[in-house]
Image 1 (cartoon, rainbow, N blue to C red):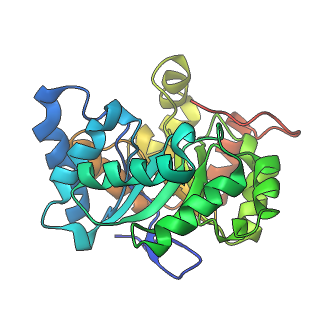
Image 2: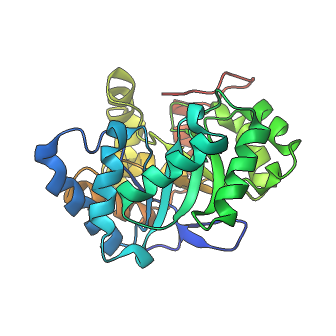
Length: 284
């Protein structure tokens, strides 16, 4: 496997592709195939698993809990807290509920899912309390834009934030204007969710684009692998595509081995140019 990795501030290094679990746990009939896919990903070295209390009202965390049973030490576990739970006693209770569903005593990285009911200072206090209690190892944020991160950096303890998880793919490059360069300056990894775009016209346009497919053929790869490889070729960026089947997981893992030429990157850049001005953060 390629050495494409991402390193967090506390020196832990992980493969630049992890496993997402959005929409998992919604269909009981698919549970065992979802568990098998996550376990296959761990076997292939995709050791970061990302989930949230929001996903299927906690059932995605239960799927993850089953998948990591007996293998907890091999997994870097990420979960996220609702904004209305991101402070005080509600935050402690939400984290404890996630721990129960996950069948573990600690979460490696706990994220604020998006900004909402609590001030950033209150959320930082919560995260520090959870760390002191040994319930989480690190904390971070999700769906925060450049101005939000500047505000967070002004909060006491805010710069301890380990990551920002945001939507990022070839057709959604707004973070390249200010947020991504700033995160890179801080040596803070960015976690890209929906790296293949959401289902629908946009995703179809990406998967069927001539430039993407020509480059895929040159690498004997799929369009999805090209899109994943493009996301993670950026310094400090990790992709967390959904791991819905063993075949998908194998395909995702193989994307770590793709390296683009300058001409290929230029062609993708021309087909899907980054905006030349500030745009609102894309959120799904």
